[in-house]
Length: 227
Ligand code: SF4
Image (cartoon, rainbow, N blue to C red; front, side, top):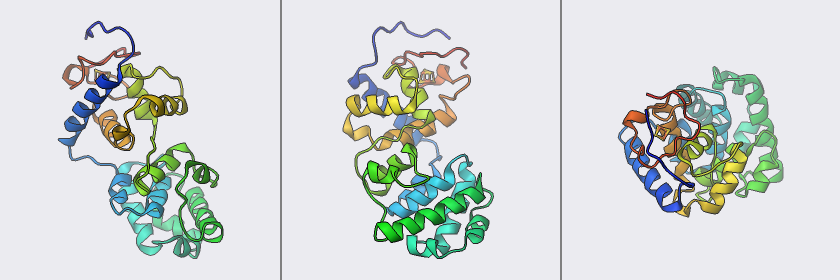
């Protein structure tokens, strides 16, 4: 597979064009993230809970485990009152379900005792909560509260680097660059769009470049074998 010779970093306009094409490309597939489906309920607590369950867990499992827990404990107060062993049973077989049960219950108690039973809406307040990392905090800000934020996970980090829009080594650096360069309208949807694209097309190993909708724009940085 030979790529078109491209010079310089991908510009803002080209990045918007690439994301528009990728969004319509993945829009033709039925895949949607379990967390995004739950986010459609517009409840930050549900987004927070589902995101923690989804870490290191297959989407199909999150899709069942998160609604099962949330049907029993739909609020921080209800979750704080649910025994840890029951939470673990409800979210099984999510990865690290026992640890997550402990984290979720402790989080619920902090939300009740220190935040009036509400999920904070700022990154700093969310990051101060035990068990909440940047990915989770950004998803809660964007999908739960509908506020500006950029959730950079492994797919967003990899694809933004391959495209040539950023040149970074760590997702946190990617987030910082995207906050400076990415047009606001893409801040919230970029995660959903690139996660779907990264799972089905621009995969970690051997991406499907020959049928890619943005092959003509992509710098294919660091891409070796491809299909
Ligand atoms: Fe670039 Fe290939 Fe990924 Fe498409 S599939 S974005 S051409 S690396």
